[in-house]
Length: 279
Image 1 (tube, rainbow, N blue to C red):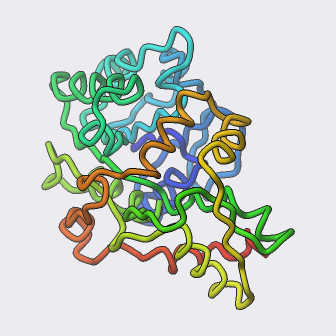
Image 2 (image 1 turned 120 degrees about the vertical axis):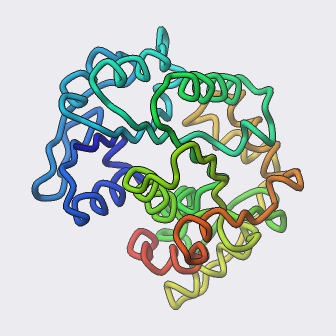
C-alpha cells in the first residue's frame, strides 16, 4: 500500500493515477471529500493534525508527503508525521520539498522545510527528497483574465526561470516510491528551459489558436493582487524570486532526465494539455 497526501492537487492527482495504473494499492489523502480513480481508497485528513493521518497510514509501506500550507498551520508539527509514519510501519517516505531550501535558505518557509528534510534523513526510514522550482500550473492564475479579456497580466515579463510541469514531478515521485535505486536521492526538478511570463503568454496563445496580449504589472500592482490570497511576506518573497532569480534558480537541472530517462516537458506541452482552463 502507498499513501499519497495532497492526492487531489496538481501533483497528487497524476501520481495517484500513475500508481494505480502500475497495479499498486493506493490510499489517497485530501483535506476534503473528493473523487479518486477506481480502486483507490480515499481518506479525509488534516496534515496539520498528524493523528488524523493514522487511518490513511494503516497498512502503508510507502508515503508521498506533500504538506503545502499544513507546514505552517498554527500548532502544526510536521516532524510528527514522520514519526507517525514510522510507527505505522511505513518504510519509505518521498518528501516534496522546494528548491528554495538551497537557493534562498533563510526565509521562514525554507527553514521549516529544511528542518523537515533533516528529520526525514535522521528517521531511519528509506527516503527521497524532491526539490522543484516554479510550477507551470502557476499559469492558472491567469486563466480568468485570458478567458475574459485575452490578457496575461504579470510582473517582470522578460525575466524567466525553468518552470516544471507538475506531471513530471508526479512521475519522478512515482519512480522514487516504486524503485529502490532512488533511495537517499535528492532531486532538483526543473523544466527543460528558462521561460519568461511573456513567452508563457505566447505559448498559451498558441495552444488556444487565438491572440493573448501580455500586460506587464509593476511590482506594487502584482503585490496588491497577490496579497488577496496570501500573506504580504510570502508575496514579497515570491516577487523577489520572480524579479531577480539567482543563477541557481535559473539553472536547468538534469535530474528529471536522470530519473525518468527522458527530458522534462516544456511549458508549451503543459499549456496544450490544460488549454480548456483558458477558453
